[in-house]
Length: 531
Image 1 (cartoon, rainbow, N blue to C red):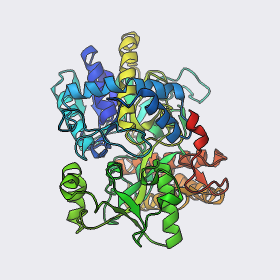
Image 2 (cartoon, rainbow, N blue to C red):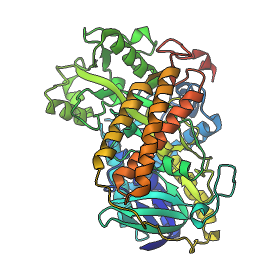
Image 3 (cartoon, rainbow, N blue to C red):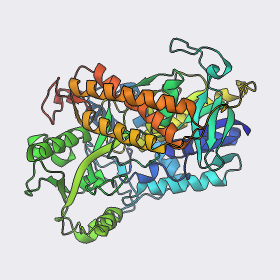
Image 4 (cartoon, one colour):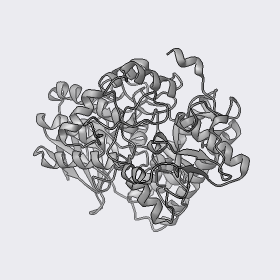
């Protein structure tokens, strides 16, 4: 099948859906999603979306908090763009139908999370992402110009390379003409030709053994852009959420929202002793990189497999009302959080780097945009401030839509693009090879490229990864394509980028902590307070 469209959107989370709604009044939109449309990282976002709504909060305070959390490696111009546009973007979500919690006075009930100096996190109980995803999907399905292709996996974006032209990273005229897409149910590869393409493919969490990300988070968009010779940056900054529920049977790991610490929950060791005072004056509400390193260090000191989050002192009725999802999940495994402490461990959670984009979501490849977790906008720097991610998606999808609407009519479809050539490929009968390579990859990344790193660990990871890379490329070149082998290939590419960029970073900063460039485990450079 060959499909032609004005706007191709790959991904169905907040970044892809909000963008699709913005451009759909101007032309045809095709949304490609590898599973069901609702199966995205957005759906699992518990905490909320940060935005300046009321005094005493100000844009300047939110900007300052973001810069401090990012260890000053943020692009301050991008930070200011994002924060000053936050209120308007959130208002659009509300107009689409999103219901954020309000207090008895009728004002929005704003939460406070790690690294925030004010209450500014809008939320819907503890399942904000679920609410947003559902609202956006309703709007998208009602729009006559939008067509959703579920269970369709994007193999590669189409560039001049597929017309026989050499493409390299020195070329400034690389262009995207659409994508090759595998229809999973029919096992057919289709050609989607598009005037413009938006990548909203999410994160990379499944390169690690333990992650809060859904199974679809395999770094597909980042890997596709890197293969197409586009720019990717800051992949060394992988955020580990400090508090995932310790329950080894769960995959993905269940996230214990940071909003619970904002509501008063306290981190403790297995002796019921607080420990965050040893690492940061903000205690359990320090930024995520600091808290994750502190927990990691405490676990190594004691040899324990987990620590505790204690919310037993919080009123039970309030606890259940504010955090019904967390309460129900913990209760399902025998933990009553009003009486029992919650066992927690850090888990791979968020990608602060990714596909390099400008202030309008434009990548270094013409006609190709990126938004959401797969994009590196410059907002997060070396560490993401809690609840800034949903906001970033809204802001940059909006800005990308403005640029797309102004330019797409001058772009012609590339009709001479050939269909995918599967000649000579055979069905791989050895799926155990793919399964075992994935386990090996996840073990390498978890053991050597986690919260704390070193030069020798990174070198060992690089050498081990090269073997898996060669084996997988050989398998890929000979096999009829399946989602599993394509995802493995993408995760190997992403793992390579994380390791390579970590090896190049000759300092400990933000989420990249190296034993070869030591600072205090819970370090934070408070000289940046004047920002």
